[in-house]
Image 1 (tube, rainbow, N blue to C red):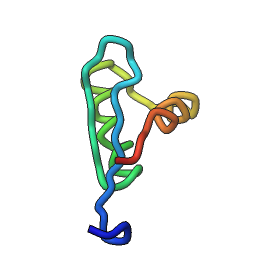
Image 2 (cartoon, rainbow, N blue to C red):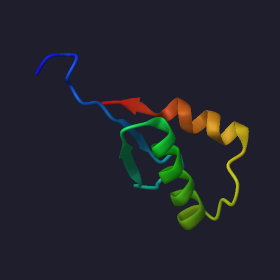
Image 3 (cartoon, rainbow, N blue to C red):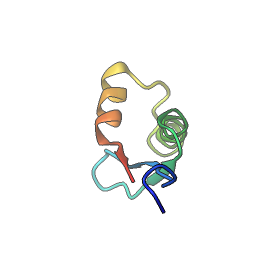
Image 4 (cartoon, rainbow, N blue to C red):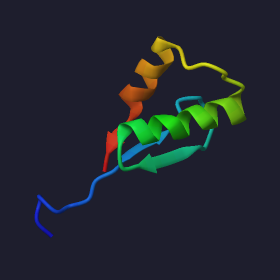
Length: 63
């Protein structure tokens, strides 16, 4: 497969120590939606602050 056709995705592991949540998505926007859902459901976070979004974005890797 050439570099131009290689599929990549964005991936993250939860930034909360001890949490085993991991997610992948084709775009950062879709991944952030998954992270927001997880944060609300599993950590009680109702709103992602700009600081939290920055921390999450810094933890995203491309695979």
